[in-house]
Length: 139
Image 1: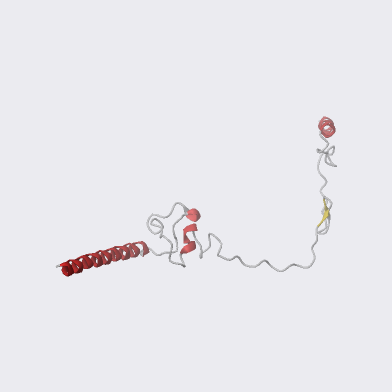
Image 2: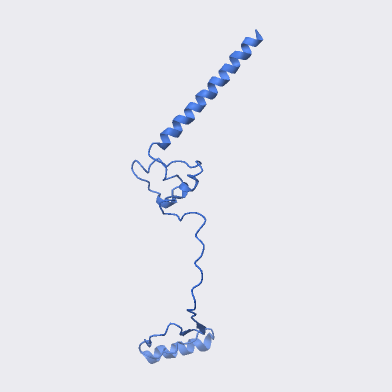
């Protein structure tokens, strides 16, 4: 069986020159010879010289760490994030790919909503006060 397989590999290499048989194609097993650390690998040598300097740390924390638990948490330090509504209740199903912040506390969503409502009320009061003042001046 090995001879017929070797023949087919040889025939294939004649038909397609880019395919060459392995040096052990007609052997039953590949040779298991331990290679030294500086052994030649396919014409390349492995250089284990002096270690180079380690690469610089990334500009921002890695995704999945405590500093960046989700994609949406990237703007948390700027205060531009949107809190995840599910993280502190039933758990977020999106995990690392979640577009919402996983660093905000459980009450942050409610606090921001109340703050926004307060700002709307103040804006409404300011507009109504302005209308009242203009009406008083017109009379």
